[in-house]
Length: 136
Image (tube, rainbow, N blue to C red; front, side, top):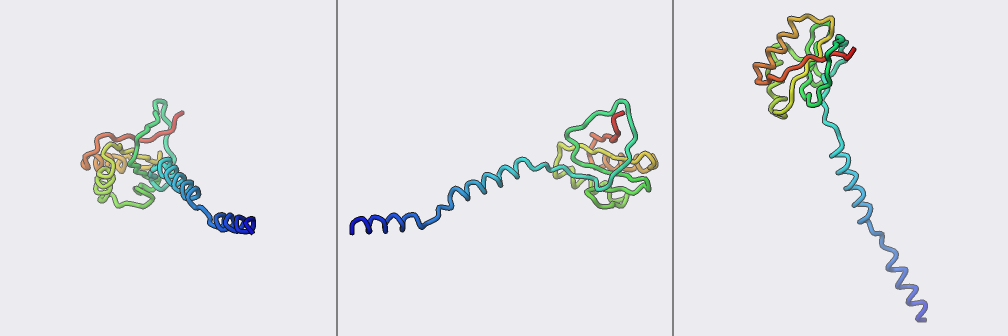
């Protein structure tokens, strides 16, 4: 009889599932993915950049502006009117004041559009402006 009672008590204790280790793993994975996620913003289009002998990789480029071969301006995967470039750069610069502006101009785009974007960036208060090029 004693043996049957002790067996019954152990079965009752083992019937509950402890979810704590599973929750710990889920939270650790969540923290891992949040910390390791890269928050890189893309301009939204592929640009055929010109080659340059002195091209250098820029680590902290957070505001990417692309100019395609048809002189259209792209920021954050959407086409932007040339008159709205300054406002978009101001907004992105307010989100990350240490960021710089990198202009990815297609080699077939006009210099006039490039200068307009550079002027808009400087009017927005960003003086760290670079032009993207491929290393040759």
